[in-house]
Image 1 (cartoon, one colour):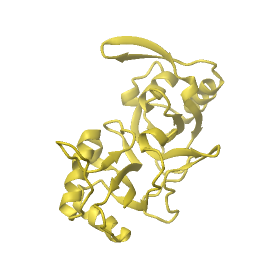
Image 2 (tube, helix red, strand yellow):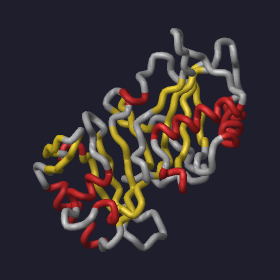
Image 3 (tube, helix red, strand yellow):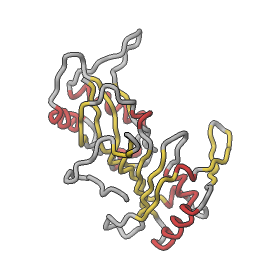
Length: 240
Protein backbone atom coordinates (compact mmCIF):
# COMPACT_ATOMS: atom_id res chain seq x y z
CA UNK A 1 0.00 0.00 0.00
CA UNK A 2 1.51 3.29 -1.12
CA UNK A 3 0.65 6.46 0.80
CA UNK A 4 1.22 10.18 0.35
CA UNK A 5 1.53 12.34 3.47
CA UNK A 6 1.08 16.09 3.91
CA UNK A 7 2.51 17.75 7.00
CA UNK A 8 3.58 21.11 8.40
CA UNK A 9 7.01 22.27 9.51
CA UNK A 10 6.60 25.22 11.86
CA UNK A 11 8.45 26.92 14.67
CA UNK A 12 11.95 26.04 15.86
CA UNK A 13 12.03 22.88 13.74
CA UNK A 14 12.50 25.18 10.72
CA UNK A 15 16.21 25.39 11.56
CA UNK A 16 16.71 21.70 10.78
CA UNK A 17 17.84 20.61 7.32
CA UNK A 18 16.05 18.53 4.72
CA UNK A 19 18.19 15.54 5.72
CA UNK A 20 17.25 16.07 9.38
CA UNK A 21 13.58 15.98 8.36
CA UNK A 22 14.16 12.63 6.67
CA UNK A 23 15.79 11.30 9.84
CA UNK A 24 12.89 12.58 11.95
CA UNK A 25 10.45 10.69 9.75
CA UNK A 26 12.52 7.50 9.75
CA UNK A 27 12.55 7.53 13.56
CA UNK A 28 8.84 8.43 13.75
CA UNK A 29 7.85 5.49 11.55
CA UNK A 30 9.83 3.11 13.75
CA UNK A 31 8.46 4.67 16.95
CA UNK A 32 4.90 4.43 15.65
CA UNK A 33 5.43 0.75 14.87
CA UNK A 34 4.40 1.05 11.22
CA UNK A 35 6.04 -1.63 9.04
CA UNK A 36 7.39 -0.32 5.71
CA UNK A 37 8.40 -2.08 2.54
CA UNK A 38 12.14 -2.19 1.88
CA UNK A 39 14.23 -1.93 -1.25
CA UNK A 40 16.17 -4.95 -2.51
CA UNK A 41 19.95 -5.32 -2.61
CA UNK A 42 22.83 -5.47 -0.13
CA UNK A 43 21.71 -2.37 1.81
CA UNK A 44 17.90 -2.42 1.95
CA UNK A 45 16.32 0.95 2.68
CA UNK A 46 12.76 1.73 3.79
CA UNK A 47 10.62 2.86 0.87
CA UNK A 48 10.28 6.54 1.76
CA UNK A 49 10.73 9.38 -0.69
CA UNK A 50 10.57 13.09 0.05
CA UNK A 51 9.44 16.08 -1.95
CA UNK A 52 11.24 19.32 -2.73
CA UNK A 53 13.67 20.44 -0.04
CA UNK A 54 12.50 23.29 2.15
CA UNK A 55 15.22 25.94 2.65
CA UNK A 56 16.67 25.76 6.15
CA UNK A 57 15.03 28.49 8.23
CA UNK A 58 11.81 28.45 6.22
CA UNK A 59 8.48 27.15 7.51
CA UNK A 60 5.76 25.30 5.67
CA UNK A 61 2.09 24.38 5.71
CA UNK A 62 2.59 21.94 2.83
CA UNK A 63 5.42 19.42 3.02
CA UNK A 64 5.07 15.99 1.44
CA UNK A 65 6.54 12.52 1.49
CA UNK A 66 5.60 9.13 0.04
CA UNK A 67 5.85 5.85 1.93
CA UNK A 68 5.09 2.26 1.03
CA UNK A 69 3.75 -0.06 3.70
CA UNK A 70 4.95 -3.63 4.06
CA UNK A 71 3.14 -6.15 1.84
CA UNK A 72 -0.29 -7.18 3.11
CA UNK A 73 -0.19 -4.52 5.85
CA UNK A 74 -3.41 -2.52 5.96
CA UNK A 75 -3.63 0.61 8.11
CA UNK A 76 -6.34 3.03 9.15
CA UNK A 77 -5.25 6.37 7.69
CA UNK A 78 -6.79 8.49 10.44
CA UNK A 79 -5.03 6.35 13.02
CA UNK A 80 -1.74 6.77 11.15
CA UNK A 81 -2.12 10.58 11.28
CA UNK A 82 -2.41 10.38 15.07
CA UNK A 83 0.43 7.90 15.51
CA UNK A 84 2.87 9.77 13.29
CA UNK A 85 1.93 13.10 14.85
CA UNK A 86 2.66 11.75 18.34
CA UNK A 87 6.01 10.30 17.23
CA UNK A 88 7.34 13.40 15.45
CA UNK A 89 9.08 16.38 17.13
CA UNK A 90 7.08 19.51 17.94
CA UNK A 91 6.51 21.61 14.84
CA UNK A 92 5.41 18.75 12.60
CA UNK A 93 1.66 18.35 12.23
CA UNK A 94 0.45 15.51 9.99
CA UNK A 95 -2.64 16.94 8.31
CA UNK A 96 -3.43 14.40 5.56
CA UNK A 97 -2.58 10.83 4.59
CA UNK A 98 -4.08 9.53 1.34
CA UNK A 99 -3.50 6.51 -0.91
CA UNK A 100 -0.99 7.29 -3.64
CA UNK A 101 -1.84 6.64 -7.26
CA UNK A 102 0.28 3.66 -8.31
CA UNK A 103 1.38 5.35 -11.56
CA UNK A 104 1.81 8.93 -10.34
CA UNK A 105 5.24 10.55 -10.79
CA UNK A 106 7.51 11.10 -7.83
CA UNK A 107 7.10 14.30 -5.84
CA UNK A 108 10.43 15.60 -7.15
CA UNK A 109 9.23 15.17 -10.75
CA UNK A 110 5.60 16.18 -10.30
CA UNK A 111 5.72 19.56 -8.52
CA UNK A 112 5.72 22.47 -11.00
CA UNK A 113 5.39 25.44 -8.63
CA UNK A 114 5.23 26.51 -4.98
CA UNK A 115 3.40 29.37 -3.33
CA UNK A 116 5.27 31.32 -0.65
CA UNK A 117 4.18 33.95 1.85
CA UNK A 118 7.05 36.22 2.83
CA UNK A 119 6.79 38.54 5.83
CA UNK A 120 8.98 41.54 5.05
CA UNK A 121 10.99 43.69 7.47
CA UNK A 122 11.90 47.36 6.86
CA UNK A 123 9.69 47.50 3.76
CA UNK A 124 6.46 49.51 3.53
CA UNK A 125 3.31 48.33 1.78
CA UNK A 126 3.81 51.03 -0.83
CA UNK A 127 7.39 49.92 -1.48
CA UNK A 128 6.19 46.36 -1.85
CA UNK A 129 3.48 47.34 -4.34
CA UNK A 130 5.98 49.31 -6.39
CA UNK A 131 8.47 46.43 -6.33
CA UNK A 132 5.79 43.97 -7.45
CA UNK A 133 4.76 46.20 -10.37
CA UNK A 134 8.39 46.72 -11.43
CA UNK A 135 9.21 43.02 -11.20
CA UNK A 136 6.18 41.84 -13.16
CA UNK A 137 6.82 44.50 -15.81
CA UNK A 138 10.45 43.43 -16.27
CA UNK A 139 11.35 41.34 -19.32
CA UNK A 140 14.40 39.93 -17.52
CA UNK A 141 15.50 39.73 -13.91
CA UNK A 142 19.19 38.84 -13.46
CA UNK A 143 20.29 37.24 -10.20
CA UNK A 144 23.91 36.44 -9.29
CA UNK A 145 24.39 32.90 -7.99
CA UNK A 146 27.27 30.79 -6.78
CA UNK A 147 27.38 27.03 -7.21
CA UNK A 148 30.37 24.87 -6.34
CA UNK A 149 32.62 27.92 -6.24
CA UNK A 150 31.51 29.14 -9.66
CA UNK A 151 29.60 32.42 -9.97
CA UNK A 152 27.02 32.96 -12.66
CA UNK A 153 24.17 35.33 -13.49
CA UNK A 154 20.80 33.81 -14.31
CA UNK A 155 17.61 35.37 -15.62
CA UNK A 156 15.00 34.29 -13.06
CA UNK A 157 12.05 36.22 -14.50
CA UNK A 158 10.52 33.07 -16.10
CA UNK A 159 10.38 31.45 -12.65
CA UNK A 160 8.09 34.17 -11.27
CA UNK A 161 4.55 33.08 -12.07
CA UNK A 162 2.69 35.55 -9.87
CA UNK A 163 3.27 38.18 -7.18
CA UNK A 164 0.71 39.91 -4.96
CA UNK A 165 0.23 41.47 -1.54
CA UNK A 166 -1.31 39.07 0.96
CA UNK A 167 -3.71 40.91 3.32
CA UNK A 168 -4.87 37.78 5.15
CA UNK A 169 -2.87 38.26 8.37
CA UNK A 170 -3.17 40.52 11.40
CA UNK A 171 0.60 41.16 11.32
CA UNK A 172 1.05 44.85 10.35
CA UNK A 173 4.18 44.09 8.34
CA UNK A 174 3.71 43.70 4.56
CA UNK A 175 3.35 40.18 3.22
CA UNK A 176 4.40 39.15 -0.26
CA UNK A 177 2.62 36.20 -1.85
CA UNK A 178 4.75 34.65 -4.59
CA UNK A 179 4.12 31.69 -6.85
CA UNK A 180 7.48 30.43 -8.11
CA UNK A 181 8.16 27.74 -10.70
CA UNK A 182 10.33 24.81 -9.66
CA UNK A 183 11.66 23.87 -13.10
CA UNK A 184 15.45 23.72 -13.45
CA UNK A 185 17.21 25.33 -10.51
CA UNK A 186 14.06 27.19 -9.59
CA UNK A 187 14.09 30.39 -7.57
CA UNK A 188 14.59 30.54 -3.82
CA UNK A 189 12.44 33.03 -1.88
CA UNK A 190 15.50 34.95 -0.61
CA UNK A 191 16.76 35.25 -4.18
CA UNK A 192 13.41 36.76 -5.14
CA UNK A 193 13.70 39.30 -2.31
CA UNK A 194 17.26 40.13 -3.38
CA UNK A 195 16.08 40.78 -6.93
CA UNK A 196 13.10 42.89 -5.86
CA UNK A 197 14.99 44.91 -3.22
CA UNK A 198 18.65 44.99 -4.36
CA UNK A 199 19.63 47.62 -1.77
CA UNK A 200 18.52 45.45 1.16
CA UNK A 201 19.91 42.32 2.79
CA UNK A 202 17.50 39.57 1.65
CA UNK A 203 17.98 37.46 4.79
CA UNK A 204 17.13 40.36 7.10
CA UNK A 205 14.32 41.59 4.87
CA UNK A 206 12.57 38.23 4.65
CA UNK A 207 11.61 38.07 8.34
CA UNK A 208 9.52 34.94 7.77
CA UNK A 209 9.47 32.56 4.82
CA UNK A 210 6.45 30.25 4.68
CA UNK A 211 5.59 27.74 1.98
CA UNK A 212 1.80 27.56 1.78
CA UNK A 213 1.19 25.32 -1.24
CA UNK A 214 2.89 22.99 -3.69
CA UNK A 215 1.32 22.58 -7.12
CA UNK A 216 1.17 19.84 -9.74
CA UNK A 217 -0.40 20.01 -13.19
CA UNK A 218 -3.01 17.70 -14.70
CA UNK A 219 -4.48 18.25 -18.18
CA UNK A 220 -3.21 21.83 -18.18
CA UNK A 221 -4.83 22.64 -14.83
CA UNK A 222 -2.68 23.47 -11.81
CA UNK A 223 -3.84 22.02 -8.49
CA UNK A 224 -2.51 21.22 -5.04
CA UNK A 225 -1.00 17.80 -4.42
CA UNK A 226 -3.39 17.26 -1.51
CA UNK A 227 -5.81 20.17 -1.04
CA UNK A 228 -5.92 21.53 2.49
CA UNK A 229 -9.24 21.09 4.29
CA UNK A 230 -10.81 24.59 4.56
CA UNK A 231 -11.68 24.22 8.26
CA UNK A 232 -8.50 22.43 9.36
CA UNK A 233 -6.30 24.12 11.98
CA UNK A 234 -3.34 26.06 10.58
CA UNK A 235 -4.76 25.92 7.05
CA UNK A 236 -3.40 28.93 5.13
CA UNK A 237 -5.54 31.32 3.15
CA UNK A 238 -4.64 30.52 -0.44
CA UNK A 239 -2.70 33.35 -2.03
CA UNK A 240 -4.36 34.63 -5.18
